[in-house]
Each structure stands twice: as C-alpha cells, then as structure tokens.
Image (cartoon, rainbow, N blue to C red; front, side):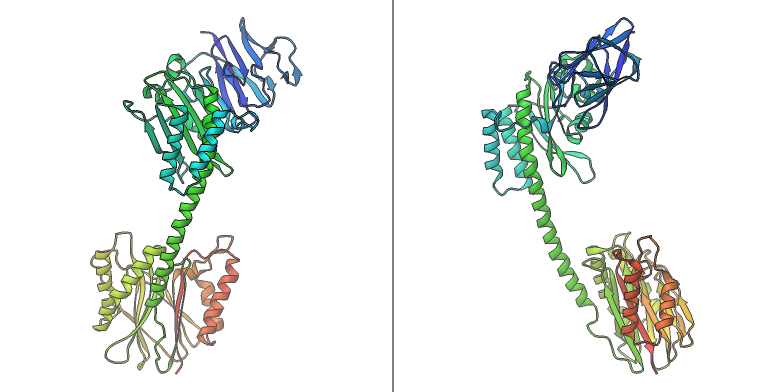
Length: 542
C-alpha cells in the first residue's frame, strides 16, 4: 500500500488539526473545490498543492496572491517536502508530520478533511453590507423584527426553526445548546412529514462547529466512500448537511444543523452564508433571552429567600430570658440569605430550669432553613413535658429520621441550666464541643457524647452534668466559627477561640461577641464565610 502524507495544520483561528492525504495530491485553498479547505481570509481560493512524485511528495504554489513559503523561502517551482518541513500559506502553517501507510480515517479526520466538506470560520462568512445578497438582507431584517418581541427561549428557538425552513428549505433542522456542564443537548428540532429516524448528533460536528466556531458544509456524505467511518452521519441517512455555530461575544452557545435525507438537497456556499447570518442574530437573542429568564428566576429566588429569612428570624427568640444571677447573649450570622443554624431558650413549666439549645442543620440554603424551622417546632413538646437532655435528643432524633431524607440530619447541644443550684446538665448530639471557661481561667471542652439527630430511628443518648460556678462562662457555637478560613485555606480553629475567650472572659458578653466577630473578620482577610456563624453565651454573675 502506498505511503500517505500526514500534515499538521495550524490555522489563524481555531485549534490545530491533522490532515491525512491518502490520494495522489491535495489542493489547499478557501474554495469548496479545494481538497483541504481552510478558514484563512487571506488564502487564495486554490493556493497550493502537494502531490506524489515517485516515492516522495512535492509542494508547489498555484499562483497565489500571497505566495507559499517553504521553511521561510518562497516556492517558485515544485519542491520536494520532507518530514519536519514547515509550509506557510497566508496566515496558516502546515507542518509535514511524516509519511504513513494508508489506513482508515476516523470520523474526526473526515469532518476536518474531505473534499466533500467545507469548513469556514463563521466570522468570515458574515456578509459586509456592500456585498450582502437580497436574500440575506431580507432574512436578517425579518429575523430582527420577529426577535424584537418579548418571547420565551422555547418560543425563540421555534421561531429560529421557522426562519430556517422558510429560507433554506431543509428536511430536518436541529438546534443544540450548551448546558452549564459544557455538554451540548438537543433543545429544539423539526422535520418535514415523512422524515423519520434519530436526529443527527455528530461529535465531530460539535467539535468543529460548536467548539471551534467553524461553519460546516457537507456536500454529499453518502457519495464519498471516506464517510463510511463516520458512523453517526452514515446511519442517519444524511446526504447534505449545513451547520453554523451560535456565537456571540461571550463565546459559543451551541449550533444549528440543517440536513436533507430522502431527496438529495445539496446545500451551497451561499446557503452556508445565509445560515451563519441567521445563527449570528439568533445567538445574540438567545443570550439575551437566557439572561432575562435567569434574572427573573434570580429575582423570584431572592424574594423567596428573603421571605424564608424573615420566617426564620421570627423563629429565633426576640428577647432573651432574664435569669437572676446570670447574663445571656446570642447572635446569628447567615452565610447565605437563609441560615441552617438555630438557637432556643425555653423555661420549664415548673421550677426555674432553663433549657438552652443550639443546633446546626446539615446543608445550607432553603432546605436547611426549612429543616431548622421543623426542628424548632419539634423541640417544644419534649421540653414542655420535662424530659432531660438525653430524652429530648432521643425523641427529636426519631421524629427527624421519620420526616426527612436520609442525607439530612442535625447536630445539637441541648443543655438544662439549674440556676438555683448552679448545675448544668447536657447532651451533645454530634455537635461542636461547648467551651466552659472557668473563673480560674481554665477551659473545659464539653465534647460530643452522642450521634447527630436523625441518622437512625432509635438512638440512646447520655446526659452529663457539670458544676456552673460564679464567674464561669459557657460558649455554645456552630462550626461556621471554628471553620472560618483565610486565603491560605487555614481554619480559625478551636485553639484560637479558646485563647480569645481567656483574654475576654471578664468582658461584658456583647463585647465578647464583638471580639469574636472582629477576630474572625481579621483572620479571614476578606474571604467569604462559607457557613453560618451562631453563638450562645451564658455567664454566672452571682
């Protein structure tokens, strides 16, 4: 089998690609008559040619306006080319990669290089006003008028298909739009009656048209044996195909593909120019409509979040209870419009015991706030009937397990303050260790002694008790405080919080809260807080 010439083509716009010359010659130029069609605006229609000569290959200039350079020197006569040579044709560089044995081309090679395929940069195909045809001007004027109305994205895509069928008469048209994950999906399609089968989706077309911004014209796929390897095109029955990218200043939105199947409808270069014009206007409007719809969705979401935040703030205590001999302080700062943190104070119906709770719902945003509201409602019953902290946690865990999805849970620190005797009983259900700063300056960590609430239907919890003496300070907090990070990714941590509490243990509680907030802001150095920050403080004054 004869050796084939392997070229590496680097165009002025778009990515470089390989071209394999399996025949005896290959003509390079802008025209659809060229074997290797390049999107280079200064390239001559038939610029240069490579052809087989015995066991080797020669390159020659075909009377181009900008000449052909071989390794920097003009090609005046046919000249032998060897591996490693660099040929400059206008603004495109063609490298001689080597000589291989002829073989089967891939679908990507076929789309990138075939005398049945014309690829042109879409920007080059936009007609200047002085050379625009009557058809293109009429189409652009008609589309501009139609797209000026206020319509949805779905209506817009259907209108684009209307214009494509009216002016270009395909048998099938498909619009692919780019998803947020970068993949392309069929967003609108239409076909003439009697046309059946799967809609065409070719990864090669996506790569060349939607990603590189090239317009493609496939003259007659099924009459060229080299398309036998392009399975997606052959099985679709496409005979002639036209594709244009949906481009605007921000990049690629997708592409529109027209095709003809049952009756051979050979699209021409003029059709490609017309489709590019339509796609250019459509892309601008698609972007505007998408931005408008996104803005509307965002405004609605902001309204919902603002309302949810109002509801959530209404759940938090408006005032803190007054307990003789004790001072209390609490604050909640949401990282988003809606927080998943919660704190509560509730007195027992009998006696002077005060139940103090801080909780952190898994997740963030609206879902977390709704679970926080549900948790607040579920909390009331067990407290009112007088259950101890471990009993409160057991009942809450069971009810949360039944009412929420498996991935949802709550960490909580539930404490009962017995003010008259200076004792604190508590259960830590998977929450951050509470800090008990003693009047002597020592710090005790009240670590977790049970699982988070809602993980299992039945969980037994443990209740512990500590003395709460004069001058002692209790801090309950959520992990948004200790996990606040600086630009280096370092977390604030528990040790820094303990050191700050020792330094400010005697200050009024609002001053302690302000000191914590100020130190967190300084530590974060402008980095946004990724989690809610909630704290509760209790100090025995007498």
